[in-house]
Length: 423
Image (cartoon, rainbow, N blue to C red; front, side):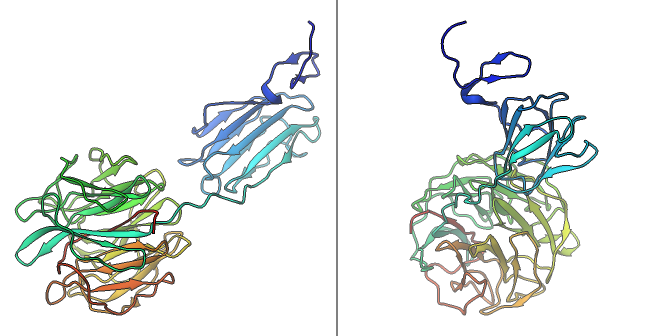
């Protein structure tokens, strides 16, 4: 053999191994719950959906090198477990537990000898996680007016000002849901048009323009809820046909609604949803077969709805939900028990529902809310003793402000969603 050997590894066996830049990066991202790794390789470990047990080689030589990296910054949620496969790890035998539980971490393992075994040369954390852009504007489309339904919409600017009615596009309906998709756009879907439940959808651009009707997918129903998850996807769930259901339909990041999936949790209508934390969602409350509920169902970053858990606060339905703050908080506010109420419940960035906070403003039901200005919220419309067009702004500290006379057609059964990265 002649020529220059560059970026190669000489092992104790005397074999020169060809390797790109000294370490071969395995191109397939690991998503399985177990993987067996080899020396000389780097691995991207994605624990979005599950923990991952990494089995190291059964034999190794001094200088053998393996690197593992948190691909999706999810090790803090689903950890990585190291199985040293009969060899020592930092001087301890493989009966000891080795776990990495910090999001954004990478681990550079070097084999030393039979006494100390594998040693982390580096276990750095990338602290500067990219910051997602925040949504600045909002929209309230459709709803029920006195004796009929409307297709008008009202845009919300980055200062929380609700604009005048925009002429309707699409079939008038209400008791629908609006979910975000693609990061900065929205989709209105399902609902009731005054004579029947529908499964139409109307895509909403990142400039707030409502598109024409598109035939939907899934069971036509009304009084359902929605959440955003994973940063750029949505989910419609629960609602009522002739009976209350727990179906869900995923909304892709290109605005495509998937077929029905059997839901998890109690069949109910009027369950309200909101995003919280980073890429997570929560459904809360609603009306079941035996009455009002204060159940919650958390939604993970893959759009999976968890089983029922007990919530906190007054069991009710017909309230509004939205994100607020800069740390992934959310709020559910107003609604109906036996009559309309003016209470709110704050949701932490871990999905915990807090006790009732006495509200400010007109007690009402069947209203809607959304984020605006990046870290604040707005609640509007609804029904008290009549159809309302009032609004209540929500500060980035979760405080609900007094009534402000609204703009646009007074109505109930509207829905709302934040959109647009541009102020």
